[in-house]
Image (cartoon, rainbow, N blue to C red):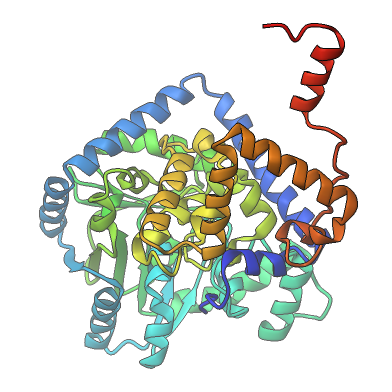
Length: 464
């Protein structure tokens, strides 16, 4: 389910060929952004909540070692088996060993972007274990053999008619049926049998409380609860940054999460898991997967505050127009463009440049991550490390030379105007990326500087 065959620009170019679909995708995400704005303005303490959440997360990142050890001790006290994984391979091995020990070859899984990062489904499938994603959006993506395109709305890029075709092909629904309620009910009936018959369930973790050794899973479908409560073996996969110090801090984040993600006051299910029921096993896997490396980068450590609400994606003009799969990374959009180069700078060197740096992502972030600043800083690092495209580096050097001198700026301006007016095909061709979507305008007869100097002279005002 990897999509890394082209860079963001090439993948985005394929996505935007269907203009009607792009406009629909753009509008759907902007509608969610507007819901977020309405929801945030309904509580006067919104900015105070953002500041509190940001400060709590800063405290966590500065004391992560201590909070993790406290969390582990309380988990063990509560009867939960704790595992530590440094990378995806180790995480997947642990999950497989738990299932193998119980002779389980089928598992139900709720939404977990961490397991998507680890490519757990593929790993288990290669070893004869069948996994069903029970979140409806992720289930649709799994049927279509695609990764999620959004961390909250996994199949937001698909229209209901496309989903209807997927259900017809894979689940046997009547051809042409695309009513969302009908399709949802059909998926529910299909998944209900999996919930009842599968002995193992895996969930992600939204928040983990160091003070009590419990973790919280937030869903709108209740699928995490169904899997966890009906299973004999419950597994939770958690990135080490998901810690909050005390239970009283949860209220701050729960008020921010749903409002930022979908414009709801709170997720329909905010479920607390603390102890296994009688006869059940509970396992929690604490996963690093590059997080401590990011923690050690002073200019980028703030990105670990992220609570995965997706607000930055919903507002980003580049994401809305290019689609989540164009980012060729599990976490897409602005926050993904910060996290991905930390894992593989060469592979993801294009992503920090997939931004206008407009700052809208930072404005909506519920934990006040300065996302656009970090994108700009990644660009500096990538160029310095030699991973930027040569065309981009040479273009920027030429631009720097042009803008460094009034004389060179004036000469290049005159040359550009002449080309636009006399041989426009030298610019309006397929070698110019801008020409793919637009034509350059006619060149003006003179620059503002030339007009100003002439105007001053004609009015006798050129005396110093």
